Structure formats: structure tokens, C-alpha cells
Image 1 (cartoon, rainbow, N blue to C red):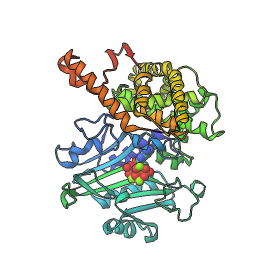
Image 2: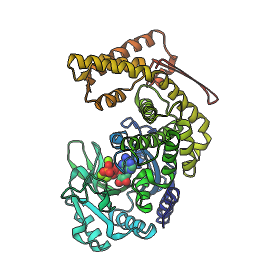
Image 3: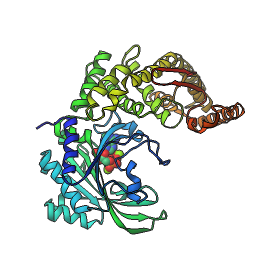
Image 4: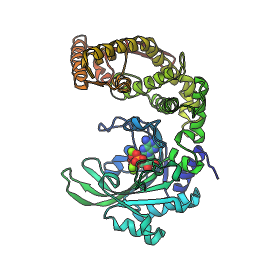
Length: 470
Ligand code: ATP
Ligand code: MG
Ligand code: MG
Ligand code: MG
């Protein structure tokens, strides 16, 4: 049976609830009290205090469907079948309660019995010397040893600096030869889209003191994460996350607005998928209170919106179109995230404002950039100077990555160090100015990540004006 995304989300949470887990709502994409992270990138991230013991969890078994942003995957988006900058992570967590045995058995039960996947296409992987996990998969679940892959630290040991860490066991699904790279030796663990990683079970059993000394934790934890969109790809037997029911509706709308047919031209398809992905990220980020700015989270959002807008241009779309797409995101996601519906007018306004600002300058900026390219060509240079990159950023609102992307397509690079230097110089100048005028008064720190070049006047949800230089 082909379950929809919204159905699968519920099936997972219901299943874990039946195993004694407390179902908790997705946390905000904005980390609370965690300075180490810009945006929530995994189900476990907002639960860290429960893992370390800093806070007492409401129950020792918790399950969530967590909104995630991974900008680190941005280069893959539109190119692989399985990466989005935004995705939902299904997870079950044990804080000193159950351990490997239950986690493995339940993941298998969910995939093969509840969802009904073909067991012969599933392959678990384990950490090199994790014989305990091997025995559970092999002797208890009954997976033949040649179907269990042993991977090293890179893939199958989860840790982030000091603190709780441990080996993991991933579950891969063979989507069939047609998705393979065809290279000899293509098998589980290959980077192509044939053997798709769907679920990661982390066994948080050690503590790293920060110097690579591991001690066994008294409290053993479980942290699992499964991409909802990837699960849907498998269940619905479609090509990529852009073909699952909810996202496909959005992708079709992009095609409609652009007057393009999907799967006619590779470059167009990449743009279509990229817009589809970025508008999902942007919609959820704005709904969690992030505004487009020039630093931190706000910069991530600005970059996503502008990248989507630029690819809209590449597809020949004129005028603003992101709010229309956002409405579709909300339509297909409000079952899981009712707050989207409440905030939709606000989300549309933020998107359209940012898009208008960008459209105003993009043509001009592109012209300046091509003049710069001309100059580089004449001078036989391959790198754009930091000062020029900064000029594009500061005056025309081109995020560095956008300039980089456009230049890379033509074989040019950027002096990024020079760019950072120019930016820092400007920041120092701006800060001094801010101190002198006691800019924003006593609450100045609240606005620390808002670039002073951008005057963002926020007057409640009804009246929003952006008066930005870019
Ligand atoms: P991959 O190797 O495919 O990039 P990963 O090992 O980086 O995945 P994990 O950090 O283990 O992923 O995250 C747990 C699960 O979240 C993955 O098994 C996958 O189902 C899902 N996931 C991870 N990154 C993405 C993404 N960018 N888009 C969609 N789903 C993702
Ligand atoms: Mg990854
Ligand atoms: Mg992986
Ligand atoms: Mg993984």
C-alpha cells in the first residue's frame, strides 16, 4: 500500500507510542539555549539536555517528528534523490531506558510489518567492532551475516566533540539497479542513490572526555533518526524526495508557474527541485520566527530565498512567486504543523518583501558581475577579488554563495578571505557607529545578528516594512 507523507508521520508516532513513548511536538528550528548550533539539524538536537542528564525528560521514552535544516547538504539538493535542506526526522529516544535490542527490533518491525517493506531489500550496517549489534541483527532478527555491513568511524560512530557518543547502526534500502551509479563495487554505503540510507540508530553508550578517552556511560541512551521524505520515497516507490505525494504537488506548482515540463531538461529540473526545496525551508524558518538578515540564521534564510528567486529567474519566471509556492507548502504540511496556517499571511509578506528587494537589484548586480568577469578575463585572472565580492554583497545584496555559484558555473573562483576581511572592516565601522548612537538602546544584544545595513522595522504582524539597502 502507498501511504502518504502525512499518514507515514502518524504511523510512526503511533507505533512508538504503542511502545511506551511519549509523543512530543516538533521543537522549533531555532535551538533554545544551545549556542553550538545555528539551526536544529536532527531529532536529538533539541533533546541534548536529556541525554547529558542536565534536565529530566518528561518520560524516559520519547518520540518526535522533528523539523530539520541541513544547509551542509545544500550542494546536493536537486542533484541527489535524497537530500533536502529541509526535511522531517522521525525519531525514538531512550534516556537510560531501553537499549540496542529494543531499538533494532522496533525499527525492523516498523519497516517490515507496519509499513510492509520488502525485507530482502533492507540492509543494516553496524560499527566495526559492535558485535552486540551484529548479534541482534544476525541471531535475533535473522539477517544473514553477508547482508550486514561493517563501517568505520566516519559513517557509523556518532559524536560531536566532547560528551555522549556511540556507535550506530544504519538501515539501507536497495532501490534497484536503475538508481545505481553502475560503478564496479557499488553496494551498501556507495554514495549514489541506489542503496539509500533510511534510518540511523545511534547507541549512545560512551562519553568522550574531549581528548578521545572513552568511558562507558552509566545511563545508556538511544537516539534514532529516519528521514520521513526518504521513507516516503521507498514506500511510494518514486524516484526522489521531490516525487513523494506532498512535495510533488509543490514541484508541479513550480513547473506550472515557470511554464516548464518536468524531466525535459536537466538544468531546468535542478532549478525546479532547488526552488521546491528552498521554499519548504524558508516557509518553516519564517514560521519559527527567523527573518532574512545578513548574519547567522537570518543569513541562511536570506540565502535560501535569494537562491530560489534566482533559479526562478533562470527558469524564466517574472515577478514574485514565492508566496504562491509557500501557500502550497502550508497546504500540504498543515496536518502536521497547524501553526503554519496561523502564520501564513506573515510568512507570505516576509517572502514577498525579500523577493522584491532582491529583484530590484538582481539585474543590476548581474550586470556589474559580468563587467567584473570581463575585467578578469582581460587581466587573465581566475579569482574575483574580495573587495569586488563584498561590493556585490553590500550594494547589490548578492550573498557570497550566490556570487560563488554564478562564477563557478563559468570556471572562476572568489578570494573568500579578502571578502571576509572587507566584511569585518565594515562591521567594525558599523559597530562603532552603533555604540556611539547607543543603537537600539539597552536591548542591543537581541539584535546582534541583524546587520546594521539592513533596517528592519518590525511593527507587529499586521504592519511590516523592510527598508533595506540591499
Ligand atoms: P546521508 O549519508 O544520506 O547524507 P546522513 O548519514 O547524513 O545521511 P543522519 O545524520 O544519519 O544522515 O540522519 C538520520 C536520517 O535523516 C538519515 O538516515 C536520513 O534518512 C535522514 N536525512 C539525513 N540528511 C537528510 C537530508 N539532507 N534530506 C533528507 N533526509 C535526510
Ligand atoms: Mg549526510
Ligand atoms: Mg550516512
Ligand atoms: Mg547516517
